[in-house]
Length: 386
Image (cartoon, rainbow, N blue to C red; front, side, top):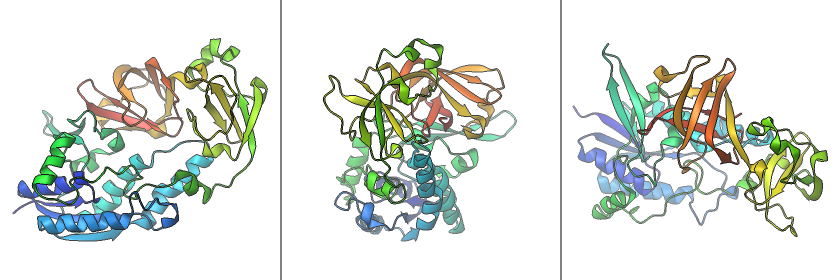
């Protein structure tokens, strides 16, 4: 009897080809579209409306001859993703909703629905790979490996998955390059063959983030303080970690409408001109509602050589790789999607995990995820940057 797979059809080319490949392999395939959002007022409908996506997913399912239905997960998405996003931005942190969506929605709520439908697996169009490893004692573990296409590797977005979640996951396009995926879609005359990749939130579409945040985070005028590149703190050992700026460290050069609307490294939207070099956000302080800025992308305040992840926020995709207190180990890591992997040394302390970079990193942002890999592309663990 064929194994049953529920595919998360997003209305894009990747999940469409994933469904096709699984059917070709002999699986019994069911297509499900997740509706995660109802509020059209913050969606750029001309770019990627959910209704168009669901219609495309339906047409793909009809073309492939597989059952299809839409599931409304908007309540769960609101509770687990949107409320978390607002809470994080209010604290002056920058969350990654796509990482959370995979952990909390696709491979939790959606997975449970699939299992209720009798599925053996769920599949997505992510560019990553899974490998089953059987140990000498007969136990099975699962490795999450970077996708074959270096320009499309999406393993970072899955960095919070557990062994149990991976055991039920399939990633059919992980061994393919993007052009190969589009060629398959064209050959099979799938309506999504030439469709642009979505740049929006997970299964929502492209969202106007400022408008989205202003639904709950109210504008609040505060000062923009410029910090000189020659500030004495940049010659101190504490430059490697978070430094708490004070308004007395610099001069007021403008005002803003809310520190929680800005993130480190941001250049646009400050509304301050007349400086020899462009201003970049160095730090935001939501308690005093102050934004600290510096001139030029090479400003020393934009770079850090170390970050920290609390023990409660540390997740080991491979539990056997967990470090003991006092233990160090070298890995490759990234702190944002599509970033080149950087050499790091991890140190496990009683309070959490220190990640030391060989090269200083630009605009390390609290609330984002750091993910670390072996040299052969196996994702070992991840955590929320403190």
